[in-house]
Image 1 (cartoon, helix red, strand yellow):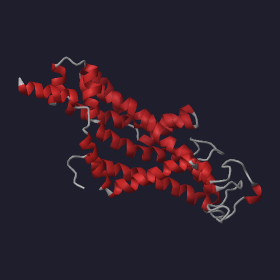
Image 2: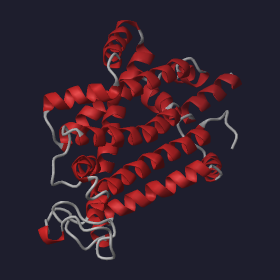
Image 3: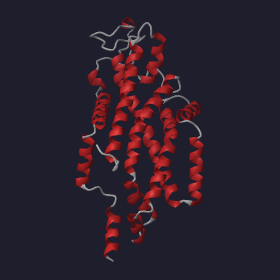
Image 4: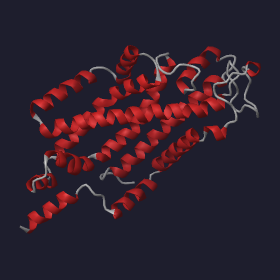
Length: 297
């Protein structure tokens, strides 16, 4: 009876992270060089996106033909484009669009993919077979090709772009969630939760989901980097955000036509994409090292 009571206690408390464990994980993250560098870069990107109006005095859309193709200078640190618009202002304001392109598709993909993975991994049977078949169909196409096909059908635009990138990432979350649930559903705390009469929904959402969230967080962090890259690629080929909206992929696409005349039109948006992707990849590596119990920092 005592052993059963202890198991039931673990089942009812398994979704709560002790304070000392939170401090332990924070300490591990702070010992990860990749995690620290990535976290600082992500924080800097967020601050740049929020404070773009404070960091630049220029309008990112209003043209100034007299200043067209101005080289980098004190007045325009990143130079100007073919319409005389300040490149620095457009890069700063473009951070807002790019971070949205990275975060919202991953939230969409994570919400749908994790739900499908939870259902497929826990209930099994014909429901699992149907979900797995749908996921296999999506996996038959490379992610960027699937996003390209979807945005081609829906049409260009920020909203359609985020939907397309989000759908292309659903299979990754569904597979990871399903494999994690297959392991967790056989553990003692889940059996104890069933024994005390918890509903299937409560077992899934309260006891299983919080205990499989660590790898999903890592995947989400790395996924934001890939979503930014995919969104910029689609905008680069004309299937994403249209000018004059400041967006890094679109700026690269325009800048390639003037690369010999105004190299700065391509270099600075390209650097912005590189830094943002690197930041989220480093943060994801740091979180993976922190949340993986088998790793040693």
